Length: 91
Image (cartoon, rainbow, N blue to C red; front, side, top):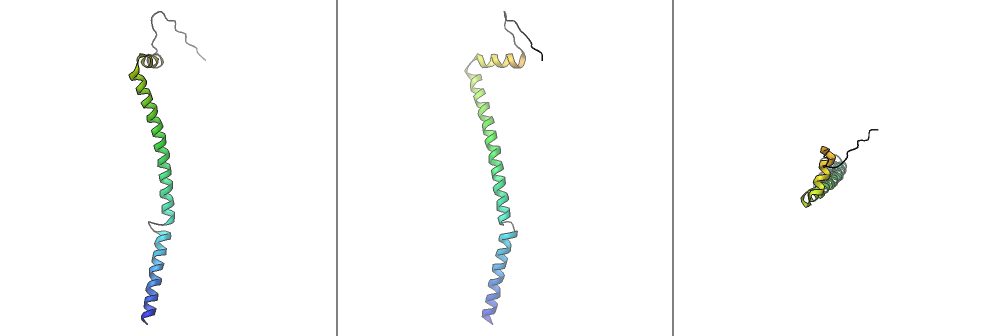
């Protein structure tokens, strides 16, 4: 009789562990979802790192000299120096 009870308890424990493995919080499906989220976050991190590297390079250009500031002023503000002729091309 004790062996049967022990056997039933072992089978119940194994069944409970299998249930948790396949359908609960730590299931294979949940782990796969976490891996996909991690991959998505790594892609976002890489994109933001590249964007930050671009900002850093632009910051270094601005710190180095007037050429970068002049280029930016010409492009964004339409700056024209004395004795220059401005041509605007319309499509």
